[in-house]
Image 1 (cartoon, one colour):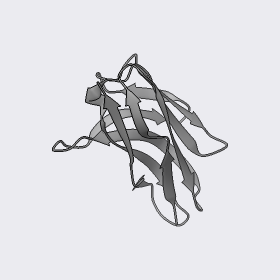
Image 2 (cartoon, rainbow, N blue to C red):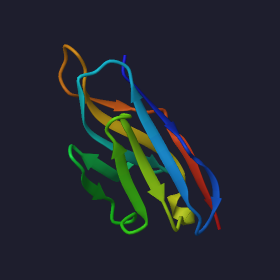
Image 3 (spheres, rainbow, N blue to C red):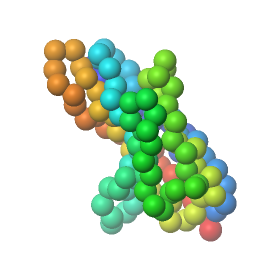
Image 4 (cartoon, one colour):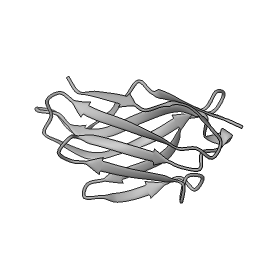
Length: 120
């Protein structure tokens, strides 16, 4: 059973920083991509950043220059360093990973989410 476990959310003042972590556990052959999405109350879930294969990254326009996604292949972990946080960044942040389980095809998995709240 593949699981994604997030950590690192919390309450921070505007202009502050937080670092989110997401570790994939269980039995699987490989991980293709990992990323972060977020969902604010009353809004749809949106892309924050993704990292694919050897390190190609993609960011939402609203997070470019402030957020940095990185990946530790040995630990099957993805990180999101968030700097210069704004109240508009307040949301539940969800980890996503495209993983190849044993005996199956590549499958998208989601974490349970971690709350980030930025106060003005």
